Image (cartoon, rainbow, N blue to C red; front, side):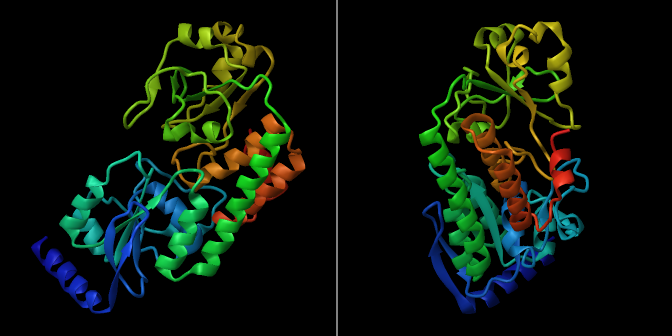
Length: 331
């Protein structure tokens, strides 16, 4: 282990001969190489965000416990080695020049990134993961990594999604807009408004009925009585750990039958290939969720929804999603 630290220090000292100091998106001053060719994502959120623009610079993707090969993403992602950033030996063996981490700026502290930087002697740059700031994040990465063209393409697409969403919301005021988001097989685990896991609903101005405190580092457990009182007009079901999804339970269990969303067949499975459209992880993979909700709540045509999501998959996952594959996402 000591030898690895000495190697890392030597590499750092050599790279500092051609380095500069920047201000990252968290307002931190960070010394970075002039020419960045080897980067390590801090976690799965950053792996997903970096892949479309910097897959050839990634020394590894972040560890996702219990992960399997992802569908509907270029094979280069599945074939990439995994590194657990908590394992300092693995990080050093990966030999990155830079670690890139994501945070919800002004909502989170950065102590964990500072500690990692101190332990590895590798600079950690923090970018913004807020769902409405992802275009700015890609433009920042373009300058940081010298890949302006690729990042501008992603940023331009994201801006178009934001603009289209705002226009639809302005011209099509919501009716019966309350929603409940459930993860896992019971239907009774959720995330309230203000959680990073339900930013999609907040961004789309859809009322999240879950009136419970925002959990720290996890999801909130509620009971059946609370859900009955909330009586959401829409329910969105996502799998969690083992691909469990409450959709079948909610559509067949009599306890749920009086809820408006179930009575009116306004209950949906949230697509999750290769990553969830609402969260898991809460990164750029949530953009298809915005596009999809524009159809469900704001009158966007199914054809436009499919076309925009196929464009997203091509840009961000390097995958040409066929019409049949698109429809299979909802099964």
